[in-house]
Image (tube, rainbow, N blue to C red):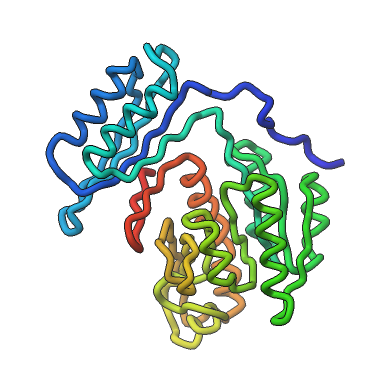
Length: 297
């Protein structure tokens, strides 16, 4: 029997929980201005985390607040925040607790990251909806069937790549997908596809970037006799394996390890690192600045 599914969008949500993310050039008065606009509308600040980068001269902040006793309404609050953001030239994003994100998972033949993500989703560790799984092979359809998630297969060849990506993008947009997770999807996405979903595609790369980019990183690591191997979750950009890094981890290895041993050890890392990155994105903890991220974990 397939597992029972986690709550859907029809279940009660913390609709009055707001999360505000901002970034801008650092200057005096930023924290006070944001706190005043929220408090002035009747929002109760629950927690706030901030970071100033003196090298880049940038300021970052994440604020969570309770809007259950607003003296206005959401639209008025949003306009007020927008006025403050315009005054300070802020890049900002406001998310509400009742807006459950929709996630598409892209896979090929490796199943470990997919199974791990679905298990965490089923146990409610990942608070999202997963309306579909996309693959270029049939191999993992039984896993999707077990979790009762629609599985869409788009075989990719050099001749069909553009048309298939157009079909995939149309499907994602029709399903209202907020985040795409490449769970060992062994295809290089085209620049045009990536640009349709900026900062909304998370990839897991099986090495500690920037070392061993591209294919067969465990074989590359074995050839170099490394003493540590790692995994890296990052946002996908048009430059292969060079997007803003969200999370990394490492494990020790030795001269006794074969390439297959490195792959086995690395697979464990890949699952954990990818799950952390996805959870932090779902919880609105990540701000992107150029080719770096600030993660309020």
